[in-house]
Image (cartoon, rainbow over all chains, first blue to last red; front, side, top):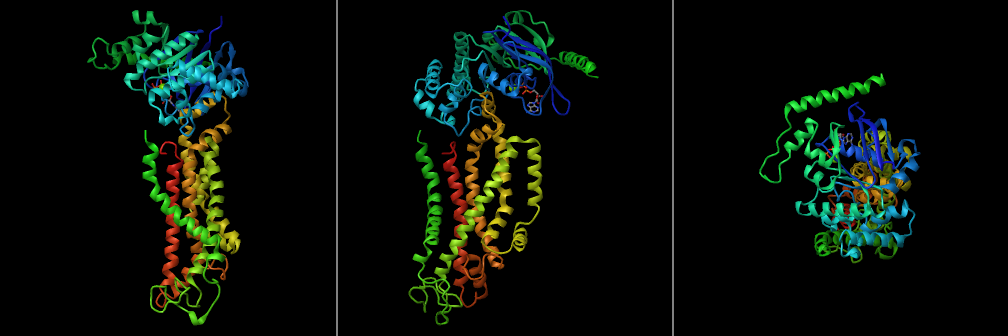
Length: 292
Length: 282
Ligand SMILES: Nc1ncnc2c1ncn2[C@@H]1O[C@H](COP(=O)(O)OP(=O)(O)OP(=O)(O)O)[C@@H](O)[C@H]1O
Ligand SMILES: [Mg+2]
């Protein structure tokens, strides 16, 4: 069976030549949750945007392939690519407030994609959305569908976005830190909700986070990203049992244990960072050579 | 939640006062021949420099007095309002259409479109506006349409700058990205997703611009570059009033009050409307 998402040697640069992704390879199998961890600025969001075809104009892909269910996104016409991505993927964003258009009601924002990409009738899209709202435990769909985004709480907005993401039955969902912007009290509920819907719908998820606790709970596979480079990839259980890369170990050491809530966040060891720097320099050289 | 209640309290006095004055002035201008007590052009040397109604020597039917040629001030102000409003609406709408469109394109698309449009705006704004207006009218010739054209040509940049900044902020929002994923093209997103979010600002600017157009028209009439010398305009009445300030202060003061009230009302009305249109503030 072909992978749901298969990224091979993806590199991307900024106009000033700075590399934001360095030969990233990463696969997500159907129905699997792959966590993507790394510190801020590592390029986690960039990978998600690359998959969804919404990279900022300033970011240019210089090499690599992305296959969505075996279809090479790079070989498709822009229009066909948009349709394919729109039909097979969805995004659960980090900030549920800016991810909804403030001047449009929730209802049409949710049905939009079903009508446009899948060509559904308005009624069919509406009943599908109501079904999903029920799955995310929204009990008063009429009010919610008529609301403007700012009239809902953060948790409600994220539920709405989760419902919208699953509504079109995508094969792959990119969840970019879907709980970071939320209240601690609702974070757990939202996480559980995503996990439940993922299992019931059998959707593969590329789950971006910097929280190793979340990784352990939700994912089967992990890729650890540092400065745009995948430094380690493993089964989640194996990674926690025996992290191979010094950066992964440092990351784990830096994460406070749940047993000791007062443990402070330790900075990553200097020696580890120095090792990473030379590793990054090596990949950059290897990359430069064939390009002259 | 009781949002409607709170906002009605926060917004309304401004909206009603400003809107009330504008409506009154607009209706008076539209129905000028019916409501003006006198013929605004009729001169009568027997009636020159009559004071307003509460002073000694006032004549009934000449509520705000007369000018040095014996023409009724109130009637002249009412008829002058016609030109003020025509210029305000036409010039502001023209400036708004051009400026908002270019601003939306520059802010949403960015890149070279933004660079070209922003450069043009910078060059444009380097000219002092009043001088620019006088120069333009001198080139285009006097007359209603050249005054409107001149104001639109000068002031589209005001819309362009603000709408560009807002569209730019909006297009960085994740919902724009979501719309891309949902299969919308760039132009579709600009019109469906971004435009509605900048409409409140467009409305506020449009109203403000109407006020500005009234001032510019008055300034142009004041320096005798506007419509024609016969038809009364607020600017030309002010110019005449300035000459007779010592004999008949009212000929200067009343048109000034009318002008200031109208300009302030336009800007207040715009701000209040903006709050009404904004889904987050509403
Ligand atoms: N719009 C942009 N244009 C150019 N560079 C960008 C843009 N957005 C992010 N970057 C840069 O790309 C790199 C990767 O950023 P990215 O947002 O993918 O990090 P991240 O791993 O998602 O971090 P975080 O945990 O903070 O979300 C960073 O160095 C960042 O400065
Ligand atoms: Mg990110």
